[in-house]
Image (cartoon, rainbow, N blue to C red; front, top):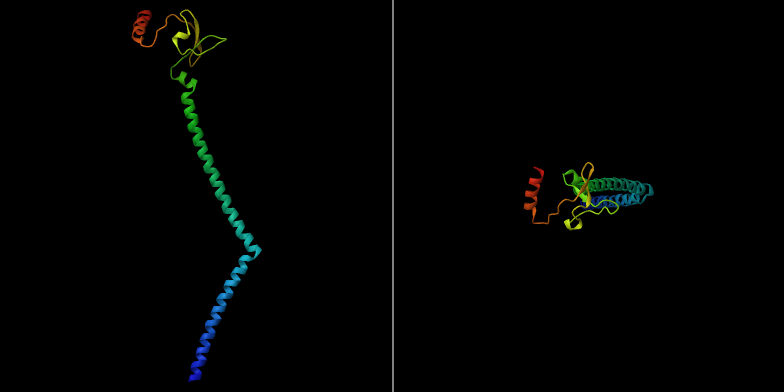
Amino acid sequence: MQLDHATSEFHHSLAALLREKQHELEKLTQRLHQQNPAYRLKMQQQQLTQLRRRMFAAVATNIGNARKSLGHAAGMLDAVSPLATLGRGYALAKTPPPESRVIRDVNHVQVGDPIEVTLQKGWLACRVEQKVENGMEEKRLRGNKDKFS
């Protein structure tokens, strides 16, 4: 009976040792497989493919953002462009060539001076008939009402 018991324990110990060694062998086989150049090449190719996809997605996102930014900047630029300003009904008064200076102040011209007024469509050759300083708009409006009635 003792012999049977010892034999049984020996078989269990041997089976446990065999399972442990098989497990170690599987781990070593897996490590060896991972060191195989063909396996490593395959893994690196997969990684490269994934990185390429991410790169193209990032480039597409950057291009989309740049397009949005450019569209916004173009809209802002158009809003302040001289042509857009003229399109909203404003005009640009300049001295005639060769100077062609923009007139920003009534004191830059004299009564009788020729000026050019640029409109959205074309320009006008004009002559200064009257100068009105800031704060005198009411007087100018009354004077023009009589003049153009």
